[in-house]
Image 1 (cartoon, rainbow, N blue to C red):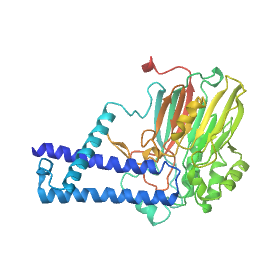
Image 2: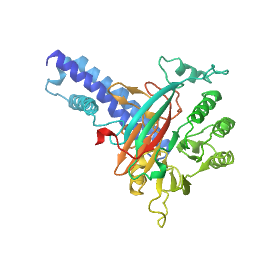
Image 3: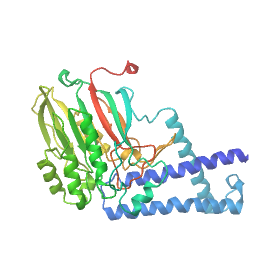
Image 4: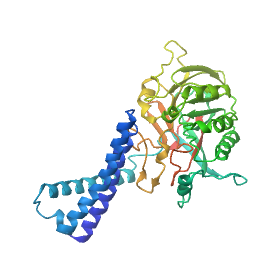
Length: 394
């Protein structure tokens, strides 16, 4: 086999090997199964990720670079060849799909415009940004964007948008993950930037806190959020690590409106808006919109995970807002997002998507259990709803 062809196959196999095992782990962590089983299966995937390359290297070492064209003399040789070529197919198949736009981050029929601005505090934080040796170690990694906040202003075309809601602006943030690994000043800075956006509505889609010692930071930062039409929130799976009922009660007392596992009907600019919160598959059940209500009411769905897009579509949701996937946290050029805990893998890692007349926006979130981001900065999304589709959509 020509050396260049062998190198090309090997490169594709390396990429495909990574895609394959990461895809399994992503889907495991999008499943609401027993934590112990998920942890064991994740560990098994890590073993597979490490062992298969060693087996291939051993085969390459004993037979040489021509092992692909050498007649198989054992079950191990057959297994190595099949897996090697399988990974090559996955690797180049994914790259080709991304090159031709098969997995667009933003639906071109929905996104009208987008502007991103990286914002920094006027003065350095007084306290340490990273709390503990592990966060400090991650913070020392070059180009780690875990504390590089991006304010992304987007105009979204919403089919069947009521005239009264044209131009309304929604600030969407998610996944604050107050773990104690990042100083409280970061979260106050995020809240200040949300208020500076002067959005009409503020929405938080879960995974707010997972450490009891961070409660005061959560209430102080989110309690200062202001929007003329309200601040709405739901919970995520990480919020269940501590007393979730207490979290809800404290945030409601601070002035936020909880819509998890229920539907709340409000009036925005004189038109009816029905807001439902879907915390599945971890909490409650799928909420129901009123069956006998204003047929022209605008339906807003707050989802923790984008995996609930099918529910949103069936429920006739006009706009669904989701988080949970953190944008992938690490995004490689051409290869795309890496870690996205979803049954769809990285398909809905972040961006704008459409199913029928249901539009879904998935934010990259604010933080994560592991404070590491590369080419995927934390995001405050400011969404302006418009009635006219993008010019490219005709």
